[in-house]
Length: 317
Length: 248
Image 1: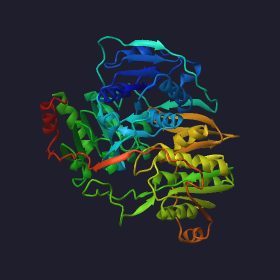
Image 2: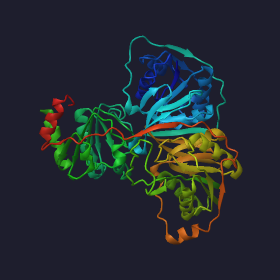
Image 3: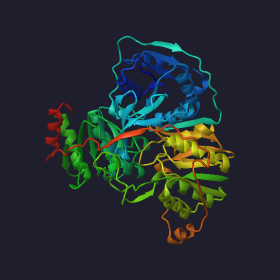
Image 4: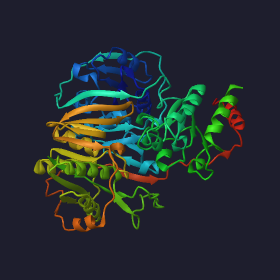
């Protein structure tokens, strides 16, 4: 039976939804236990939030001042130490930028290979993962005589429920050498009061067709109207209309909202890679040949500046 | 400053890949291959340091079969001073690649090891981090801005929450993201000149690399397809449909 250790993803004192999604993937292994490791300088609230996740056996904390900001070079030796001390068979993290940065370093510390972007579980050591920007899926088998390190494709899993009995929280001592060669300077976040792009059930996105930073107001306005998060294509980010953290696609965020509505996005392969798992895709574009219409459940050919106010009005009715 | 830059041969960014009908993999024969686009951004960064007088030697390295020499020559055409071809005829996965890079770094002793954040073929996003871990070096992944200081680098990273800045001591591994720069176009005279630049060839055994265990690929399949849906005529019709499905 497998024993899973999950690395908690948190930002500015909040447990990220990606942690619950990683737990959902771990549950498919039918493991003996799923423990969540929270590395922080002050794990109180984070550990309490992790303990509420359904399926979690135990939450482990190892508070120290160096853990104030999640940095791979600082976290990896501690996670490797925890994995070995607890005789875990699997160590999983989310395939967010946090996990992408961190998990390969953990694997190398442990001297083992890693599976990136797990999208399906076939057995303790057999998984599906995407390659070529999601244009192919490979089924891979890992050796069973070493710890399996993996990152979980968050768009493939819904977060586990919260509630029920809280898991026990246990503070542990980790003997790991913490390097001083990496220092946190700061983070500039485009965060707003809008729902989080990665976990929102509704997302409204704008692309090159929106035309300017100023014009993006129409996208925000409609998103606010329906309570959606706001995303953008790479073209819109590269043109400076919106900050990078709004990018949806192969090199931005891979999302799976119930409803994805995009305006002025042509649908480059790299963008489609980020929305493949969305429930319903709606596209509004004035070019009826735009590839986005090949994947959209509902397409409307028209000028987004004319359509958006009409949509707002129709929603209000 | 000495810079090592890693480049990988991969199916060209613009090619729509084809799968072999027996599920054994992706068709490579007769398909255009290029340098992994993220690695091109890494090479461009190294060139900008060379032009600014910050870097005095740039060495490009690739791990791959005979054909990978083509992409190594492209790196030389960008302006790298010399190339190292770690020649293999086996599938080299990230941990083994990282072990090879560690051995090479210990010989070459660069101040910065640059590479793309991931290769667009297997999308692993592992080799930079693993190399850095094995060397016990700092890592700065997904770089969109790099400012060199005195024995340090201040790196702005593209992360889910926005832009994070960290400072690392050199030597360090830095993996680069899309918005760091726009690689230049290669000019014919530079491509000609690159043919005369020195390339050292070595094997994993020459470097004393112990192979890591590999993942075995059992099957390669097409992704689940999304079907095209329907066109609606008006905003009102669209909203009605979405309301019917309980989405609005």
